[in-house]
Image 1: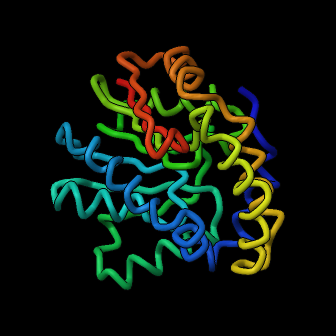
Image 2: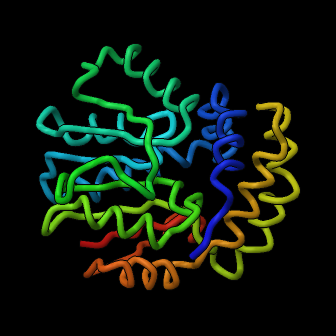
Length: 233
């Protein structure tokens, strides 16, 4: 379950932080809005109060949760890339949200700065594959969840076999060059392609989450299984 070098990952996201959202929306064809909507739908199946969004980046998932869960939710977002968090804090000001109710914290998913059993729900969107040690990260998530708490993982997966040739042609042959035009950093999106191709499929990630102590783990494929929603208790 060893992952990429955290120093390289932080440098990658720092380099694209200012244009990350624009590139994200454009390169996904806007489907990322739908994926976040499905995550929020799953989050609403219970009534979580204390929520932690890991690898929160520019804050899109946290703001979607705020809109979908209402004012009773207390939201915190954590990321280890300060330039991405700067983008999230700027959005918070634009949206005129209270600072104390939507915290953006610089921290490490492998060593969460929270007490045991602090949260009802943890979400992590497109960040799990970037952890240097997924098993350690999942163990930390389990530690800070309360009994009965839920983990929701939105992550790239392995697409259906019939779709893979088209998908990987786009991912490896088209996306890096378009991303270079949009962000000035082709290498960042070459990393994206390699990190996706090396990531487990739905069944493999279910097994990893279960091995970390979660139960009732389920996976739902979205968009030809380009991404999947995983949930465990």
